[in-house]
Image 1: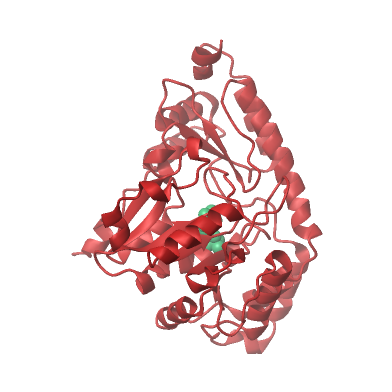
Image 2: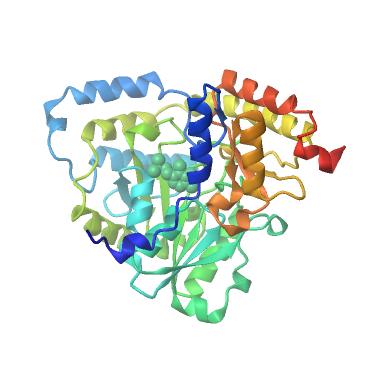
Length: 396
Ligand SMILES: *Cc1c(COP(=O)(O)O)cnc(C)c1O
């Protein structure tokens, strides 16, 4: 059999080695505790499940849905954006439900990228921005996110000839994996840069509702003029513990939304309507629903940061999102350090390089670990005071 060149252009899967080790340890009866998974451990709230069950019993929801999504859902999304961000969206032209935001993030490249085109992609980042670009025949240009620049890209460092070929600027704040939050001043600069250079801004915003301090994170669409050049991806996955139901949305510029709708109408047949009904219920939930999850994540964040600092790792508690981006001790690279945590503590973390070269020097801890498991994992780390402790070299 011969498979497409497109497929062989996909990057090698970086966690092969770690997954092999996890499987080996589990087969040997060892309990492995994973801080590597970014998938809420708490169940979908029961009022949302109930509306899903009721909608599933309705024969009208047993037939093909429409690509554009239920009007009721598009209304609920636009009402939610108005309440939450004070952003007005026309539900007919500026809102498109997705089969999880990942689906739209992958497919949008086929609307915006031709072979040879460039997409400006942050590094480190959620891998789908670059993968969609590559599958569409384009090339990612990586913008490093460093601690010194607050994990924000520096547009002035992008070469003019790259900008000339670029079509798309990808952004994601609150950021996975670094935990950075961007203010409206940065979004203004990004929109201005995009308008001057005729770029589409794709902002991925699934973590806006999981925030721990100060003002809630912004939407890129709050910036004046953003609607002329941008779309924002959002999702119910992280806010309402709905990763398993696959429901998200793209909102923003109507030309972009129209083209994504056209593409999708040729590829998929929409989102099961019962799930769309459940999404309406979720978006109409009182803020306390997410508030309860935030309280749980905040406690976990503080616990993890405390233990990591105790054993000598440098961390900055994130103001939003589901991840702690911790610096590995000097003398280690991310992959080595993750491997030694697994070997010596049976604890799995994600090496920063899994998200791009600029993730070197960091590992990611996720807050989506069930409390009891988390406590056990942290006590393993805390007790790890033998000679093998690589933190010691640095701290003691
Ligand atoms: C989880 C995640 C998504 C995907 O969310 P779905 O709506 O479940 O597809 C997109 N972007 C980032 C950065 C994520 O971490």
